[in-house]
Length: 456
Ligand code: F0G
Image (cartoon, rainbow, N blue to C red; front, top):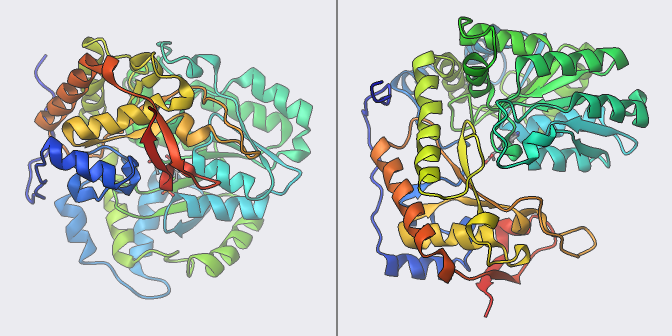
């Protein structure tokens, strides 16, 4: 088989600044060993997130010049709406400035303190928006989805039995909506099968509960269905996407992921009463319903992004490039979450650094080292992020991972080869690495602004 090449050529480049190890030692020390505190121009390869960091195409930049900035009824909104409706034909479409704004509006309208919201796995902002209403966010991913070594093809699947049991125990009247996150970001970017979406829908139907999809990485999920699920290899990605959403009553979306845009999102649904209330809320917090906090040019960029993201040459390259990084890292013996997810490679820091106990944040130590050694910025997803409990105690997270999230259409294969080399080199001297501690930490979301130091 031939090399799967980037299906684009580069028209405009953005220089990245080479730094020495000595310089990076100083930058990371000045940042209190918190990668969120670094200046991004001191980072060589930025894999902190795939959100809003993708490169736009020449067509998208061209479309932005057509953006119409009318306050109400802009043609940019109607182009955006046409592009969304083609893939996800819900009756009401509400643009927002990004995904979490859609979540915030939805849960403000549908949830209260007596409610529980099941999901395969809530992303942090989804969980926070559910909990902000006093409701409980319940994760019901299948057992394989919690095992970093399981090779299940759809590790993002909802545990259907557990879902039904949860609904009957809790009472369907206390569950205003069920969510399904595709792909399952917090579970390693793992896909959900069509069969599982259909079964989730059947359970929801039995109890009269609406199903909403957290659609951020819908195209990547559709590509996995095409590759892995019997009966879908000859179905076009667009048709797979339409079928996925045909089982849902609505969705929340961040266009910063599979919208191939730098900003934007939306909330869509079929329930008219909810839509009316959501729009009223939107006017309070985001803007008029035909722009929802976005500029007309953002809406045009998303409209084109949605056409491009379902192109099969693009998805083939996208998923192959993530798998390429995962395969080469794993071949060096580095423990990673298997199989590779769609948008990121997750290194298992507990197995990488078995001599560092979870409460000394092996994931943070590894993430800092990847920056120090090679200027690569990843993100700890583990005990530093999730370990602090509301009562101030600390419990090790279920897994300590370092996520290397790959921006779309942004880095070349040689840049990814460099990432692989850096991970391999750090793996070779892992025994000399030390655990970390917080030297200062806020009460909530401590990983964003907390300060770290090394344990003695
Ligand atoms: N849902 C999922 C599954 C996400 O991954 C994100 C964002 C959101 C919702 C919220 O969207 O950022 O536009 O408000 N994930 C980013 C990440 C931040 O790095 O994984 P947003």
